Length: 381
Image (cartoon, rainbow, N blue to C red):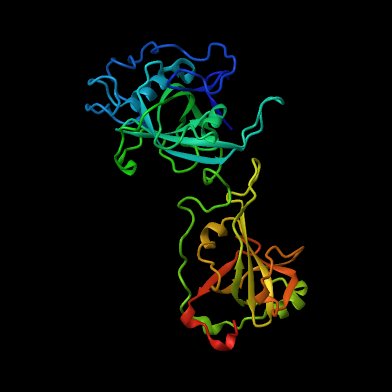
């Protein structure tokens, strides 16, 4: 669980540039007003040296959207103000405009601290730039509605008017900025450069900021492959195919209950389902995905289930028509068939009492893809 160093405050909101609040609840004094004692003035003060991971002294050139020609990059200055503030929380009434580069969504982990408090289903990380640096920040859950109503998105111009600094107790990495209030500005972004060339100001992580999740979800659904962890193509097995003596699905269906391990199985993929995401706030799996396949050999057809972290590794490569050589796998009793047979498959016998399970353990699955030119006619696949 992460926590800010300051006490819990109420009253987080987002505002449009005309000043009307998008969401507001009564709030007591939430932040410190103006520059903190001992810190530079957010508009005209001199810039000091940043310690730790905040980077070197502020670069001399003015960033895009900086309020004065003598000011340094706003994200560096904002971080310095937060870290010098009492309670690690500040109000920034004269904040410089920033551009949203990226919105990333992931499953929340925590239960509410109070029985009546709402528990967010998801968190959002917001990457912003001042034209010189980029920084990934956590969007306070009370502002999630700005994303869900499509008012906050990539390319929008914003001002962060209240923010705090938080630590992730599940990670040894430095803390991160939490956006507690922001103002959404009208007009197009002035930033047009490639985001990949912008140096990171502070939070140097590709993982979600809050909690222990290992991956992001698509912005608007949970079931599509998303992110760099999804492997586009696995290498093919070219050599050593003759040394295997595969069993058949029909023999497997008759003998599986008396065996602890199984001989190799050679099958062709007949049908493929969409991914299914089964993550919940307290799900222990790092990658809670599964996918269903109908696979067949000359003796019949059976359901095959791909689980967990094997989905990002293999899902894209397992296409309809792909021939697999399964060296290690599990066999389980099947409750029902997930994929419906098409009319052209009615001549094939379906072994609906079992399913093939491919998982990272018990046992760890060993999967090979056989290239088309290595497939022999006598396999009758």
